[in-house]
Image (cartoon, rainbow, N blue to C red):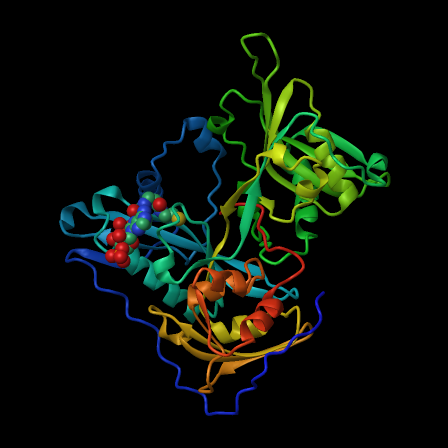
Amino acid sequence: MTEPVTTTVTPAAAPPAPVPTLPEIPPLPAGYRLAELDDAADRAEIIDVDRWAFAYELSPEDEAAAVWELEPGRSVGVWDERDPARRRLAAVHSSFAFELPVPGGARLPTAGLTWVGVHPGHRRRGLARAMMTAHLVRSARRGEVVSALYAAETGIYGRYGYGVATQHATAKVGRGAALRDVPGAQDLLVELDRLDPQRHGEVLEGVHAAVVRPGWIRRGSAALRAGHLVDWPSARKDAESLRIAIVRTAAGEPRAYALFRRKESWSDAGQPEGTVKVRESVALDAAAARALWGTLTDLDLMASVHTGRLAVDDALLHLLTDLRGAQVRLHDGVWLRLLDVGAALAARRYAADVDVVLEVRDDLLGATSGRWHLVGSPAAATAGRTVAPAHLSLDVATLASAYLGGTSLAALAGAGLVTELAPGSLAAASTAFGWPTAPAMSWGF
Ligand SMILES: CC(C)(COP(=O)(O)OP(=O)(O)OC[C@H]1O[C@@H](n2cnc3c(N)ncnc32)[C@H](O)[C@@H]1OP(=O)(O)O)[C@@H](O)C(=O)NCCC(=O)NCCS
């Protein structure tokens, strides 16, 4: 942990600025109507729009394996009623009631936005914008402090105030890649098995839930847990069914796992060139990580291991003696949208003492824009509106990018996204907003 650093100016007490109201849903073209959807009655239409939007078809085997994950009362769509005799659903979105762990360990009520799709026959008419405004307003009214999502395309969500709050790495590691030794790793036992959700689900979720990391959202419902373990027949593409590697102590305590599948392949010269594809890997300590990756990178007939989402500080990246050989790529992960800036700033803890006024711009949700006075430390934080002069100016998406400690305010300032209005305040606030553990999430929703 760094030494506490404090900004130089503590603003004078001032009356709080008036809190603006939430925005109106923008009007839709004539004949379209936004409405809450009925999870059961509208399910077939919801699925149909999703398939049109994402361009996929499920085989009968996939259909049999599918799990309905959406939560009742949280889906909203747009009906095309231009021809009353042919009323059809044209757009849909839904959300999960998540809890987002933030630096310091608090868990924020979070709307996990999902299933955003507009039928291609109705695109670019403002349907998504109307749904997104409805999502933000409904989530804020439910008391959710942030909205989180994974973006299908990176150009879509910035306009709604979302910023990239977690990043993840993926790596392609060659067979036999050298890994550093970790004391105790050789004493651990690694079991390899076909994935059996009944037998392995609890072990896997127990290890997953033991991770302490900002952004590490748990699969909170039975449906999400089941959905994560679905082994889509069409996704196998001639590979084996899903396998699990579980690392245990000699006493049987699970400390790490990976969900993966192998696919055999041979070169023209008859050399084995199989690949191991990892869906999710989680390790609770260095020895368990070493045992897990030591096993995955040493499977017979496999030439490479393709990781799933890795935190940018994942142990694998430091176990490898040749990082260059691992073909590491960086990706945007969870995008966050702050719905209640005061609650969000006060909920997290800070790596150093900080006393700063942030001028936040928000073109969509007036309720978050304005000046916020944050007083934070490793132990506590308060945040409220102020009319005192600001130290830093930034938009709400940029604040979301810094919020979990993954991207520094200084780095964002380097890209012109944060303006330092009071000299010295950027370095101090940047230090305070940092965190020893990188934010990450291991699974998609
Ligand atoms: C992305 C999608 C939801 C947009 O729906 P839409 O109803 O056409 O969007 P709107 O007409 O409301 O457009 C709103 C704004 O987003 C922009 N936009 C829409 N889709 C975009 C895309 N894929 N990339 C960049 N910008 C996009 C529009 O140009 C418009 O910009 P403006 O505010 O500057 O005018 C829709 O194209 C879709 O379903 N795509 C396939 C599935 C998908 O990617 N879903 C998102 C899952 S995370």
